[in-house]
Length: 126
Ligand SMILES: O=C(O)/C=C/C=C(\O)C(=O)O
Image (cartoon, rainbow, N blue to C red; front, side, top):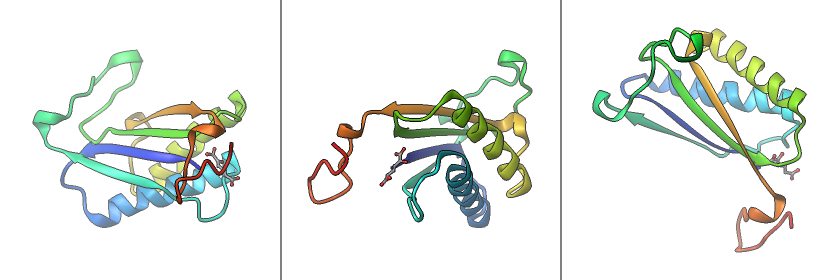
């Protein structure tokens, strides 16, 4: 049940933002085996005063087009799956909407199955 929060600078067109959703969904389907139509994602847009990034930290040359992507998933994935997710996400977002790979910043948070309720006040996966 991945839950995804995406943060970026304000002002990108809707098609750009939808392409991020589409690329992430596809990357998760291909690398993490998430179920079909498992799509729970939000985008938060920030003006310059509320958005900070390093243009060079860790040897990566970023710009204000950097996109922060935080993905919370079950704690069941291997390191190889997570590496594949990072690679595929950068590839797909590079194709559409055309984000440079240097600007794709991803963090995976792992959460035990009992920590999820996806409706009706139930712990469906506990
Ligand atoms: O198999 C399911 O019904 C749900 C899967 C959810 C994930 O893949 C996840 O959150 O990691």
